[in-house]
Every structure is written in C-alpha cells, then in structure tokens.
Length: 377
Image (cartoon, rainbow, N blue to C red; front, side, top):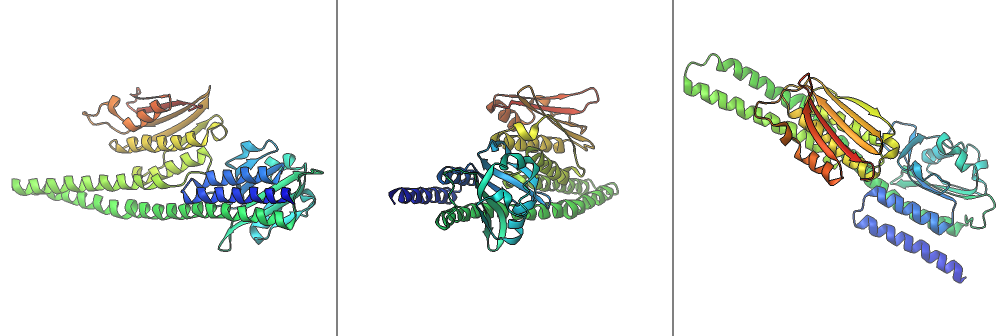
C-alpha cells in the first residue's frame, strides 16, 4: 500500500509541476515535452509520446511533438501520416486501453515508427481534447511481458489527468494559430487594398504635379507625395512586423522558413524562391530553428527595403557542422547606402551565436546577405 501511495504521489507531483509551467507561461511545446517525460518515468513505460493535429499541417497529418523511449527521441517535431488507431482516436475522441495494443484492430502506426513500436504489448491511447475538440493523442506503451506495465483504471485516470494538462497546452497552440490566421487576413487587406489605393493616389498626384505652374503649390504637392510614400513604407513595415508573435514551435525548420517567405510576399508583391540543401529539418535544435526563422525575416526585410526588387532567392544549407543562410536580391541600393552598415540585427544575432554575417554585391549588382552560424549554437 505504501508503494501505491508513493506512486500516486509521483503522479500528483508531475501534474503540479505541469500546472506550474502552464501558469508561468512557459512555451506550450516545452510543457508537452515535460508531460511526456513525466509520464514516461512515472508510468515505467517503454514509450511515451504526444502526437498532435493542427491547422499548420495538411489534413491527414499528425506531428510527434515529444517522444520518449524506444530510440524515437529524434521524432520530436516530425510530421507523420495520421492513420490507424491514432486516427481513430482523433476522429472518435475515445481512448483505447489494451493488454496488447499492437494486436488491436486497425493498429497500423505510421511507417516512421512502426518497427520500433512493434515490441509493445500493453498500451494506452488517450485523446487530448478541449471543449470537445481533439487536438492530439497521448500514447503510452510497455514491452510485452514488462513487469512495469500498469493499465489499471486508477493508473489510466492518472494518465488522463496529465493528458488534460497537455490538452490545455495544445489549446494555447491552437489559439496562436487562429491569431496568426487573423494577422494573415489583416496583412492581406493592407497589401491588396490600402497600399494599392495609396499607390494610385501617389500616381495621380505625380501627374497633377506636372501641370502645376505656381511654385508654392508644386512644393505642397511634392510634400504630400513624400508623406504618402512614407505612410506606404510604414504600412509595409507594420505588415512585416505582424508575424513576430506567431508560434513557430511544432513546425519543421523548412516549414518555418516557408512561413517567413509567404509573409515577405505581402511587402514584396511576389514570392521569393527557396532552395534547401542538407538535413535542415533533422539537424537544428529548437533554439536554432527560432534563430533561423528570425534571420530569414530580417534578411527579407532588408531585401524589401531596396528599390524595386524583382527577384529574391533564399538558400538554406546545412553542411560541415554549419548552418548557412544566403539571401540574394536584385533591388537597387541608394547611393548613400553602405553595405557594411546593413542589417545590424542580423549581424549581432550571428555574432551572439558564434557565427558571422556578410553583405556584398555580385557581378550583376545583386545584393547578397550571407549568415553563418555553427550547428552547436
């Protein structure tokens, strides 16, 4: 009995720790990793994972947000097909508790994890749901014949308690995605309607200015044109600032870079091209993923600040223990612009991470920003 009470106390302490992280505003993805680690340890399971479904990925896709055991830790942040028993739990909102989970009808896990999970016997799949909406699934499993297997009603109830806290963290992610969609809508409206109207007004004023004979009127028209140009630039800057609070966690690095490229379209008027070399989605830590997304945003903001760019290329490369971001654009620099003074934020970010940032022009007078940092940053 004393052992059972200690075990129950471990569950309660895990729940309290998770609740504290939620109240402190810790990243939802850090909360999910903590929940997974606690369940893996306290339950004595061979494997524990939290798999999510959200609007940031295509339909019929799930994401392993956190995984512990069976050598599957590398799956963190990896998308997989939403299939088999996992899909059934998501669709029905009903959990599964089994003495031999791999023998359950429709088990069929994703190919990336199928071989590793084939050793499981007792297992539990619990929906992570808030307000009737399933946001993910908690998977817990033990090897066949494991003396640590616990799937009693009391044990499952403790897992459900932790699953409920994980669902609250996922609700935060869901809310951030909705906020990002609203920012998309606002940015598109500013770009497609407001900026176009301002541009039309400026064009009209330019035509009127050529007909004006009185110098004082000419000066007033020129001033109005300058102010409208400044207003347009401020709106473009505001559009680019909107994504800064978007939740990037849970997406692969390449998906995060694509998000930044999509946002750049709002101020460039076209979509920059993207080339990826090397295992970008496998080699970057979560911290370095965030740094890369910010670096892409800053480099694209620099390209957008140039005059009339018609081509922007983004190249991300992982090789020889280094992450390299290269952004090339064909916009024109003003005569006063000094390449070595560009992008101080980008350069400071690289230096802080033990890397470097250079800005140069090639033979075609294109501006090339190259940002390098070690993978260990």
